[in-house]
Image 1 (spheres, rainbow, N blue to C red):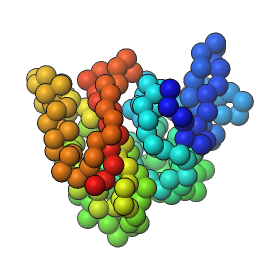
Image 2 (cartoon, helix red, strand yellow):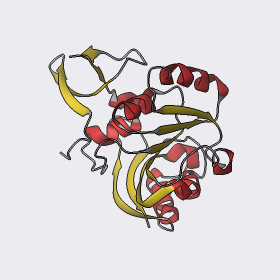
Image 3 (cartoon, rainbow, N blue to C red):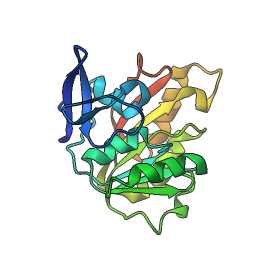
Length: 210
């Protein structure tokens, strides 16, 4: 089992070891010892950590989160990371995200399209430590490549690739191989793992900017 980033700890909940972070609850998750349970079944990054993938996160990183939705996962990220820029395309989830950010001074919601980094290039700082990506759209690898401009040297990419968003009928392994090939133009892929049983037909990817 890989080491967890500082700020992410395991706690026993109903006899089961669960990931937790410190912060106010966001999505009805249970709390224990003043910490909130990080539900891997509702979070791709949580699943990557639960499955023992080496995310290379240490805690305190500056983060660009692509596909923040209503804030389920990015709220946990903001609990242990540094400045966290949360990009979401749909206005309704962004309203929820603004509420989540109210108690998290390092979380910055952005109503923007992750496929068009120019929309937030004037807001997001450069030289970031990490991109966390969970976007359900065709061309997920291209999204990651375009946003690499915000990463510093050796910056990390932690991506959850949804096969059905690329092609609803193709074999997921074929989709994932295409994604790996596209990403390799910009990133060195360090580790990949399927995210079952938490998320069907998803691939977790840890990569570093070339």
